[in-house]
Length: 211
Image (cartoon, rainbow, N blue to C red):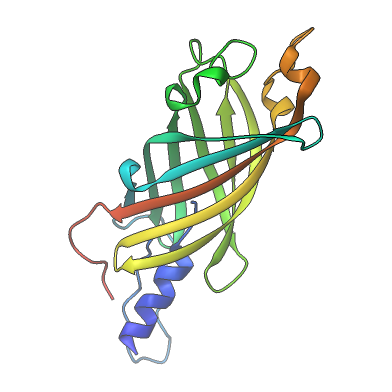
C-alpha cells in the first residue's frame, strides 16, 4: 500500500516539462483525521535537474505551403523544476540558440547575436491522462515573451529519473521571426515551427522522498 501511494504521488507531482512529489505519512488513528498536507507553506522542496546531454530539442519548418522542408536541432543549456507539497513552485529551462543551424542565426530570423538564449518558464500543469500533463508557461525568444501550452508524456526510467516527451507548434510571427519589412523569410516561410522535445531530468537530492 505504501509503495502504491508513493508512485501515485510521484505521478501527481510530475510536470514539463514534470516532477517528483512527496507523500504524506498516514494519518494517526483519532476521531479527527489529520490533514494530508499542512495548511501553511513549508517543507523541503523537491528538485529535478535537467540533463542537457540526454535531452533533445528538434525543430521542423516548412516553406511554400509545405513544399519545402527544413529540419534541425537546438541544444538545451540547463533546466530545473522545483515543487513543494505536490505543487510546482518553479520550472525554468534555457535553450542555447547558438547551436541552431547557422542559416537561422541572422537578425531577420533568430537574431542569435543579440539573443543567444531562449527561456521557457513554467506557470503550471494540469493532469490530462495517466501519464500525460498539459503544461503552461512563458517562452521568451528574440526578446519577446509569449504564453505557450502543450502536452507532455512522462515515463520513469527509475525512481528519481524522469523522461518527458512533448510536441508543440509555434507561430514564428508571435516572436517576430522573419517578419521584418521586405523579409525574404516572411515571403516564403510558412508560419508554423514544429518542436519535438525529449527532456531527461534526475532528482537533485540524493535521498528519496518520505513515503
